[in-house]
Length: 89
Image (cartoon, rainbow, N blue to C red):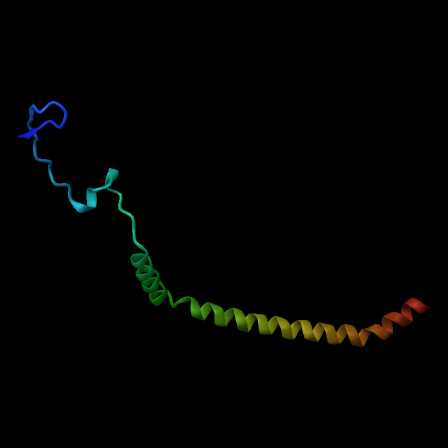
């Protein structure tokens, strides 16, 4: 029993129940620190290497399309004089 700071009467104080660390916030929510988030990001980066093959396939496709565009440009350049002659007639 402790004395009241205002009137001096004894006050009975009941011990508070200890709350587990995972329930110390309302609803049991717990914030993650920066270190934890960095570790999670590193783990995800290590185990998500499957996307590397997709990038190489896209590069091959882009190169193929670029070659097709180059061939089309060559054909258009070769056909320009003929097209100009038709316009002049």
